Image 1 (cartoon, rainbow, N blue to C red):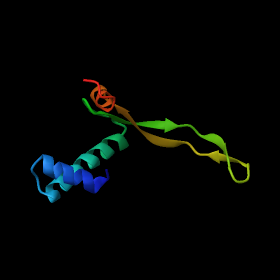
Image 2: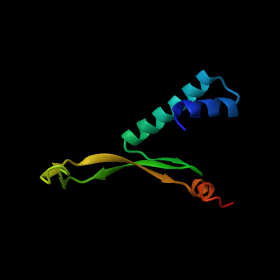
Image 3: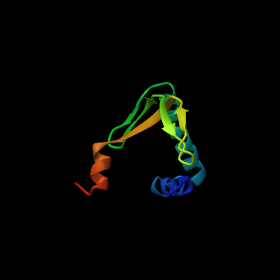
Length: 93
């Protein structure tokens, strides 16, 4: 499922126009991105949690040449699925 498919599903399930569904999805995504960018966690009960993390600098290898390269430290985004989401995927009820 891609973003267009998700918008179509939201529009159908919530009896909204596709334009309204797209605005709603875009607002939710912007809110999650904004919160995680500021360092806050976003917890959606039954769905999961979005948070930021840190990846330390490390030494890697160029797979083509075998040469060692330095990989810079970076911020990452973490998602942890909630219990209800995990249970739905595993068909537990």
